[in-house]
Every structure is written in structure tokens, then in C-alpha cells.
Length: 292
Image (tube, rainbow, N blue to C red; front, side, top):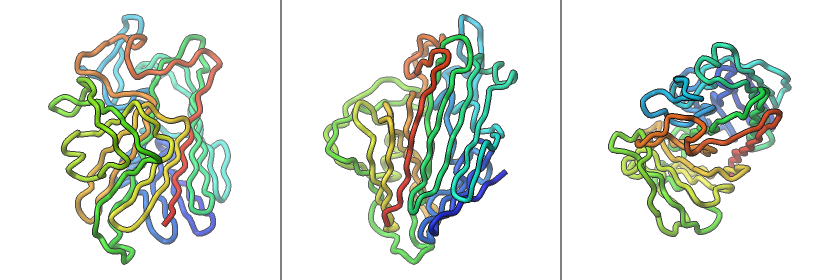
């Protein structure tokens, strides 16, 4: 089911399949879109893994389990807990089928709300089981780059700019672009080109070891976005298909990490995972603000 939200001239369509943002229009310009046409296409909620597992499986206490790329939530139907003209709250609880792939009892909830030129997101992961919950979490918002459809000039370069100069490291992938092999310093930067060249060089650019709470995205179509993230994610990933009339980039906060080429199969020993004790919850906030 697709739920339309409206507020002060802004419009968002939220798909209950995967709790993804199907489209977002602000100031008459369609800015964020699920370009693949189905729930969990470009936009997605990544849980309990980001990326994919090396070998396609992992173990918990020696028992083998398998998860699809980016985890369980991107293809499931959420329940509508509450909704209004400008907000919706969606929830999901693990099923017995889910536990055949991920043997933990969890609940997930998200609130989307429109405020003027902003889309707020508040995601919550709950451990409702009786053992520690090991998980990764991430988001996958996409931004259209071309301004030709609104009469803007399609020139210049798409830029991802940080609040201040940072000196991040980069998690590097293997030759197939699938699994982490190590990291290397990027050097001091204030901005990065969100270009086809950047994507081609890294496959997915995975920045780490810096603060990524406040980011700006300048598109060649003339738009400027402010992306607010709380807490600051350990990894900020940049991926997409920037070329062409329908070029887009995904600016992805990850509280997790893709699997390693030299893999550790046992979940309790894997890098890039978080732990929630029984009864605990974790909260993730993202604000997408269209400045122009």
C-alpha cells in the first residue's frame, strides 16, 4: 500500500512494503524517487545487515542462516500504527519465517513526517527477545540529479559537501566490488564529487572514521539538500548512477558495514554489528531538507 503525505506544498509517498520513500516532491520538483518501480527499489531500510554476506550465509552459535542483500525489511509489508495528513507511523515484528533467516525477536518502527521543506524520519529497532540482538542498520535515500524537467540548467558537477574539513578513511572493496578488503586514508577533504568517476573508482564509496551528521548535496540541476543524521553513522556510503537524464545518487548512512573478503562466519564475532540487550532500543534520525 502506498500512503501519500502532504504539507505546505510538499508531497511524499511512502510504501508500506519495506517502509521506503517511493517519491518526494518539494517546491514542485520531484526530488527523491524509487526508480525501480517496486517497494525496496532504490530507497530501502537496511536491517539486520547492510550489503551482502560473503558466501551468502553466516552462523549463530554454529547454526547456519542465510540473509538476502541488505536484509529482511526491504520486502516485507509494514503495519500502519497511526497516520495523518502529514505523517505516518509504520511497525513490523519478526515472524517465525523471519527467524529461519535471522534467529532473533525484534520489532521495527518508523515515523515519516513532512514539515515545510523537510522530510523527517525516525527509525527504531527494539530487542523484544530474551538474548542479545546483533544487527546492522542503514538507510538508502536516493536523490535525482537532473534539473532539466523543471527548466533548470543541467550543467556543473554534483557535490557532496561536509560541514567542515574532515580526514576520513575509506573501506576498500575487492575487485568484484562486493566485500571489504581493508581501508585506506582519503586525506583532508571538504567535499567529494558525487560523479560517475567516483562511483567507478570505488564501486561504493564507503567513508569512515569521521563525523557525518551534517551534509549538503549540491546537484548539477541547481538543487541543494541538507541531510541531517543522528547519531553520526560509522559509515557514509555513496553509490548510484549519476550519468544521464535520470541520474541519481544514494547518500547512505550505515550503522554497520558490508562483509569482509576474509570473512568471519559467526555473527557474534563479525565486525560492523551493533548489540542491543533484551528490552533495549536504538533510535536513528534523518532529516532531508530541500534548501533550493
